[in-house]
Each structure stands twice: as structure tokens, then as C-alpha cells.
Length: 637
Image 1 (cartoon, rainbow, N blue to C red):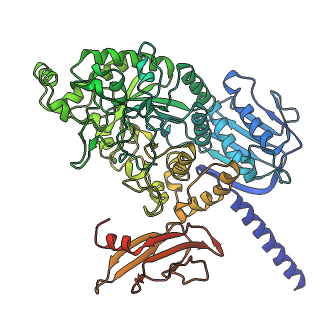
Image 2 (cartoon, rainbow, N blue to C red; image 1 turned 90 degrees about the vertical axis):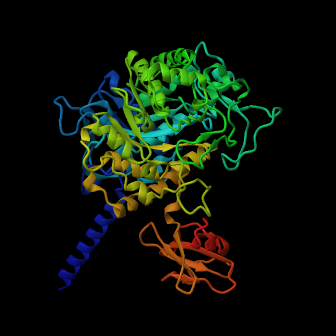
């Protein structure tokens, strides 16, 4: 019996150890296949990385080398032979058709780590998975002492579900430096994104140098500094300095394109036309249909659109290029020609969204164009413009992509659609045989609030982590061959600096990454969130800001049959307890725990709540005024 007891104890210890090791494995996005085996690989004092001596692989091994040296302090050598190798990066001599050009196979044994792939991109993504298997301290930019640099033994086979896995970074509303863009690229590749959609122009700034059009950056790249709530800023006075902004020289762009290429990221440039063009018009007023445009200035965040009648807005100032003006097409030909020379990616994005048409309706030039071309509606006027731009893009050997408004009035042959107003536009385009990238607001807009407006910077809509994880790029009834993939969009009206950009992107960017990479059938919210939680400490080590909003409770406010205020609290993250107070003090886990809907006590003025996981506070302390809850209960939010 004693022997049996020892045996049972040994089994329990082994099972516990395996369970602990399993919990250490938190790969995002979830691999296609991962098998854990016993044992661990221990990083030696001198690491040798074997990699093919090929030009197209030359960036992968140095990337891994740098990551290892920074955090571990180990000596890491590169070699083109297998002699003494600790980590082997191998290209398959015979193509493994199952994993494609971005897939990989990763094998970790106690003796050696091997990554095999058909192409260099696969090796790079295998390296990203390997790094996630190391302890969290691997994310440090400086050497960390007293860490056991071990990797659990695993066998991984992995490849992406979609080829287009994008993040859009809006550098027009607020400018981000070249080094900050590089930093954003470094963050996105850790989760196997392969496309940076670069939103380079808008009403608030023109961010790319165009030779022969110097005013685009002399005038169009600068506005007046404001902070607060974008769209409510006071109009700048003539004496206020226009010194907020910046632009990328063509040499900057070349450097960014090369930096991205070395990380297997394509950059999709966007010049947004014919709407969202105030920065261009402020630089060159002759591009407008509207008299008096020479008085226009680059927008600094003051309101100049009336959204009360829905989409598209009514312009209070004409921010559109003139479809009836030949100078506009000469201007765009110059811009597009230089974009094609700077960006090797096969697509160019030309916007097309939110184009107000009320100034066109009053324009004699537009009326003359409509009569000449037989155009009956303003949507057809925009379609006329778009079709000319599509031909221009295609004539230079590139493919055209635009927001889903380009469907209105007739879609040009060969144009691809980026569907942002839900899935409807993408479905329509796919059924017409056009390529589609899904980027719907309800799942993929990273500028939206992540938690309650009482604590988040106010934006007009919300997108919680759980909802982002529900993103499914292929709608029912659509032929998947037309869905190239999807992306998340970070618009930066309310994003003033890089720390906010990081906060808005992560962890929701992980949810979109998994939706675009991992098999649909493997997606599971509870499992995903358990992995996300293990990445939070990695962000802490990397000193990357992220949102913990998923821990904040969701408020559902109503009135009961007696008209009393009824407060329901729901947790997005599993396994949380909510503690609360009505007495204006700050609750902790020794306060009342939320068990059922609360009824507002008489004369209370404030509800404060905080979430715990076990004995540890994880959510933010949220103070919800009773007056705010009454407004919501009465539908006045």
C-alpha cells in the first residue's frame, strides 16, 4: 500500500508538472497543431543559429540573434553549417504543400530547436512562435539576470488561414515619426500580421513628400495643436502657430518599406480621395470646385461636418477634390506615379469614403459634367471620378482598392473593396466577383472605446475584446476565394501619442490576428483569453502599453416595475468577482460582492465597483455617478 501511495503521489506530481508546463504555452495566434512532449530545451551559454546562406533569408537569423542577445546576454553566433547548432532554420528542399509560403514546422527537443519552412516568411513566423515559448523576460530590451532560459518541448505545424492580415495606422490625423512607425511594425509582426495599411492623407494632414508639389508638405502637413475631444475643438485663430504635424520624405518612405520588407510586411499606401482632401485643397485650392477655397486651412480638429442626417455627412466646408476639373487628374497622376515608385506592394488604396456631395450639388462645373457624361446622381459623379482613378492606377501596373462607398454608382472593373460599414459592402462586391478585404466597424475598429464611457476617452462607439474575437471574415453564402482576408483599423483622431496607439491596439489586435491566422474551428474565447492573460506580463516586460479594459464590468441600467433604478453588472472576462460600494468609499474584496441586480439605495450618489480574480484586483476602480445611471435608464445616454 505504501508503494502504491508513492506511485500515486509521483503520478500527481508528474501530472501537475505537465499541467504547469502546458499553462506556459500561450501562443497567439493559435497554431494549427501543437503537441507538447516531456522535457525542455535549455539555451546554452553560446548559442549557434544555423541558417541558409541565402540573400532572401539573411534577415531572419539576425532578427532572432538580436532578440536573444538583448534579453539573455548570451553569445549568439550565426552559421551556415549544422556543426554545433543550437537552433536550425531550414528551408525545405521539397515543398510541403500543406503549409504554403507562410507556414512552418517547429520542433523543440532537449537537444535542438528546428524550424522548417518552404519560404523565408515561414521561418520568420516560426521564430515568432519560438520567442513566445521563451519566458516573458525574452521581451526585454536589456539583459535580464537570473532567468532560466528554457523552452518546452513541442511539435508545431502552422500556417495562416488568410494571406491578407492587416493593421491600418492613421498617421494623417496625428503624425507619428518614422521610428514610431517602425516600432508599430515590430509590435504587429509578433502576432504574425503581414500588412501595414498606411493612411497617409486626410483633412488634418498630408504626410508624404510628392516631388513637384511642395505645398502638400509645406502647407498640408501642419495644423494647430489641440487636445481634448477631436471634433469639438475651437477654430484656430490666424495668429496661432501651425506647427503640429510632420511628413515623411521619400527617403523616409524607402527606409520604412525596406524595414517592413525585412519583417515580411507589405505597406499599402492610402491617399484618400475625393473626400477627406482638405489638406490637399488648403495646399492647392484650384483642386476644389468651390469658390473661396483659397481661404481654407488644414483642419485642426474643429468641427466642419454635419453628421445629424447620417452618412454621408453634410459638409460645412468643401473637403472634396473636384471630379469636373482636369487639374485634379493631373495632380492625381503625379501622386499615383510617385506612389507606385515608392511602394512595391501590388495595391494602392485611394479611399473613396464619406464623400459629402452638397457642394457638388451647387457647382456649375459638376452640373456641366453630369450633362456631358449623362450622369444622373451624385453617386454616379463619384463613380465617374473613381473609374478614372482606377484606370490611372491600373495603367501604372498596380491594383486599385478603396472603401466600400466605391460600390455606389457602379463599381469599376478590377477594383477591390475594403468593407468597413459592416459586411454588406464586402458581400455585394464578392458576389460581383471582386476581391474583398473585410474590415467592419463592429469587429475591427480599434479607435472605439474598449470599456464603459465613464472611464474610457469618449468615442461614438465601443468595441470590447470579446466582440473583436468574434470577427469572421467570410460571411455565410460568400465564395471564400473572393475574401483576401481582413484587417483592424486604428484611426487616430483621439490618439495623440504612441502610448495611446499601443493601448488602443492591444489586446484587441491579438483577437483580430487570431481570426485571420488560426483555423476557424479552433477559436475558443475562454482559451484565447487565458492566453491573452499570459501575454499581459510580456507587454509589461517589453514596456508596451496595453488595455486591461476586459476586466472592467459592463453596466446594464434599467428601471424595475416600481421605477427604481436597477443595476446589472456583467463581466466580459471569465472567473471574476465584482465588489461594490454606495457609500462613496473605495471597495476591495472585503466589501459586498455582486451576486444579483442591485437596487439603488435612497439618497446614494455614487456606485463604485472593482473586479478581482481570486484575491487580486484586476479591474480598474470605476466610479459611476447615480445621475449618469438615471440618464441611461431613461434612454438619455
